[in-house]
Amino acid sequence: MFVWFNNRKKMRVVRGGKRIRRRCPECDATTEFVECTFERKLTAFSLVELWGEKGSAFSCTECHEVFEIEDTPEPEVSAHERQAQQRERLRKAEEARAARARAKAQRDAQVDKELEDLKRKLNLS
Image (cartoon, rainbow, N blue to C red; front, top):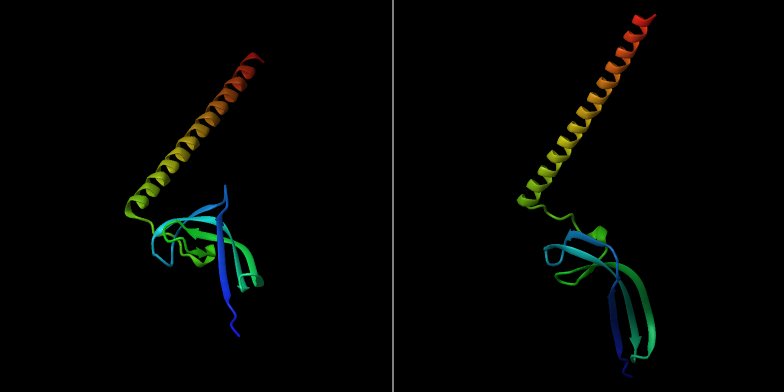
């Protein structure tokens, strides 16, 4: 007796799905992973489904292998990206310093105004 088994796999990218930048364990490229749904079927004689599985995972845009996102390592950051991140941190720190200086100036101005008002009240009495 001869039995013919067929193993089919369908994968579809989720429209508007998540996109995550990771390093692919298969092709070792730092690339974007897109969310996709998959369906696997094992059939006999291409008619009778013996086993089926549906789920969602992430697909590498370079080699199109499908992985759970937890199975992929964080991307390696290039020197250029590290410099850009450092510049962004410095810019945010400078903005925070300027905001604190503005708030201090406003508080000092408010205190000076209140002192001036108190002096006027004391002189009028």
